[in-house]
Image (cartoon, rainbow, N blue to C red; front, side, top):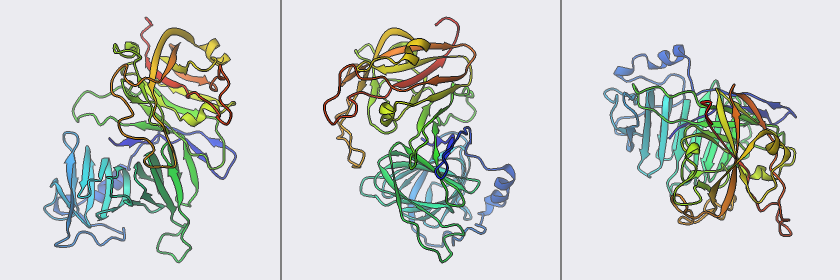
Length: 419
């Protein structure tokens, strides 16, 4: 499922946290109409530097619409809304969302509006809009080009979005290498920039001049059916923090309506939330908006997280019981007395095979290794709520271990005055 990116940016070259949110994958109507003129007769690419699909070009995959009324073209006569795409095709996704399955079993998901060229079996170029790629085992090396950068897969799930000349990269699993295109374009005689590695839980924006900036929060998209009832605006509008560190790119992922059994807890760990017993997690959490925090934040003493709620809500903090509740939690939240479990697995961030399949159990009460207490705060007016640093361990960790505990989780549900 394609994820839209809400970008809060930290300039990597400045000691300032530039807070911004709500940038959506969008193209101006005028530009979009310009690109789509003549689409029914097979649009031709203008000023993109690609030759396009040639007669006899090999078929490299198939396209499947993900929602009703999805409309697309491949930039050649008679190819509108056909299922096979060829090497050299330009995919114009005008409406809806689609899945591209390459012959290698690599899957790319597009959410309109998107313009993307298929350069080969293992290489695409995004002109405008976004794509999320899950690279099949054995197909490592799949590349996504933009005007500003090149992203090279190392066995992973990642997304690339192009808007206003900037390129956003979000790594959901595994690792990628990022090469920044020197200002002036790839065609200029300039030294090739060295590759920079990004891992699961990291997100970066590459500006048109090559500047790298942190993307602070990413919001998951749910791809509703066209014509269905419109979803409410997500309760959690944005998440920001006071992390100002060189070469720091961790992000928060907002998952609207996503809290349920086996929901992923962190962006940088494969751990999952589960009910402690077979009866399941507390019903009031189910289908709530939640935030995948990053577990590396569990040891930051001066951490401050700002959660902005779009409307009245009840905010929950899921707090590791191996820690002493800090002052900010005791004074601003109420301990409900309820608990939720976490299914943990061994994790190595420097290894794409960082955990073995089968270690994570499925369902409530299965594989629960840790217990978190549930704290509640009513926010009847919505707005911004400040959260603080994780607590201190009740028992000192073994020598050489920074913390034997997890970062807290964040869940929001609608406020109706009866909680």
